[in-house]
Image (tube, rainbow, N blue to C red):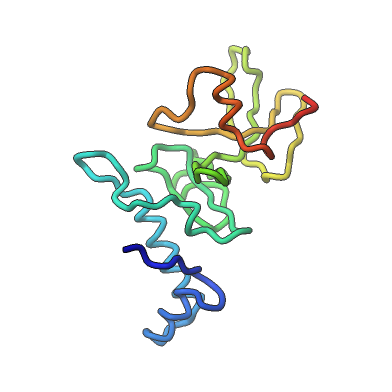
Length: 172
């Protein structure tokens, strides 16, 4: 039987309940709960390679919060709710903000791609706010999926059908 979902913060949040049990500050309890959920998100069953917990990361993020992640495999990437530019101890690993599909919860890096697609120069990805749609020169706003599973079908029409309405621009 599944328990009723509860928010981490705010009225009726589990951080308030944990603070009442432990006598600790509510904000400190919320931070610990979020940190544990982030760690649990990356755990995989060594035999099946499936996630150890049957939940999607977006279920634990309050609307308005931003998750930042390094561009690495799910097992290796660093996740944080604190806006910072780099993975701690690794200035060569930029942290990028994540956006989540409202339908399925799949996470996407919210990025600007810098560099021409057909250029011999390497492309790189820079963080962007989800509302920043600026595209110009060698910079293109978009979403990047780093999936180890087969995330998208090969057929462009099937890909188009899977995109949420608010991700589509009818004027393009």
